[in-house]
Each structure stands twice: as structure tokens, then as C-alpha cells.
Image 1 (cartoon, rainbow, N blue to C red):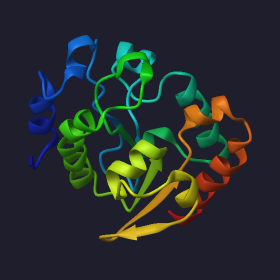
Image 2: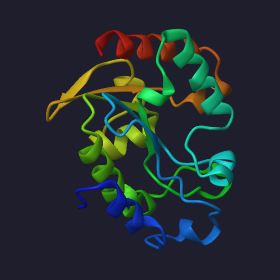
Image 3: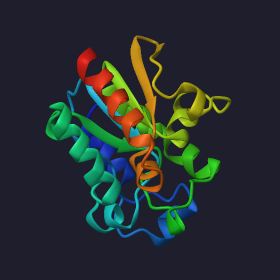
Length: 181
């Protein structure tokens, strides 16, 4: 583990821990306030994120930004990262070995940020952070406390693009986060 951002970022520059490195354009490390009270963790970069090297800049990210604006959450005040730092082919769910290869980077980001709240965006984030046995459908919208951090599992914004009925639940979950901070 690294005790500063520079060393952590240098450690990932030429990462080859899994096969996702073979087709990446950019590593999507994360972005935002490195002293944030709230951290968002998603699944992995999509095409737009891979091209720009930034998390949540595509359609799902724009939807998330709209929710942030409506709830008074300033994107610059939160920290955003993903389970995997490189884009899985065709935006598929990362394989477990791929997630495992990146988890120490993410754990180190959490240690450095020291968030009070972590919003888990979707099943992949939930399972890799809190346990493979958990279901996003069962846990969504329920606060979970672990080691002094409060977790809010919710839908991944990409799921809202496929099923508009989830937008209200997503909004309510983020509203609960905004009210808790």
C-alpha cells in the first residue's frame, strides 16, 4: 500500500495485472476531491471513459451529473473511482480475476480519501466491496455500516438508461446520501 497519491498513481501507470491492459487507451484511475466525505465506486470504464481517461463521462455519467445537480451535490466535492481501471471489451462485466487485479488500487484510494460515505454503483461494486453473496436488488437503498464507513448500494447509472423505472429509486438513494453528509 502507498501512503501518498503520487506513488499510487506511478504504480498503476504501466499495469499489466490482467488482460484488460491489452486494449486500453487510458487507465481510468479516478478523479475528484481527494479529501471527499463521499466516494462513488462504479464497475469500470466504458468507451468514453477509456478515450478520456476519466470516470463517468459518457451517457451514464451525464445522467449521474444531472442527479448531482438536482440534489446539490457538486461533482468536484466527491471522489469517483471504479472496481477496474481499464475498459472491459464491449463493456461487459469485469471477470473476477480482473476485479481482483485492481482491488488493491481501489483499497488504497479509499485509504487515502478516507470517505465517510461510499456509494456503490451497481452489483459489481457491491459484490467486490461488501461481499459476493450480496444482491443489489436486496441491498439497494439500505445503509450498511462497516469499519466506520457508511455504504449506500444503488443502481449503476447505466441501469437507469435501460430501465427508467429505476430513476426514482436512484434519486431517492442519492438524496439519502446528500442528507446524511
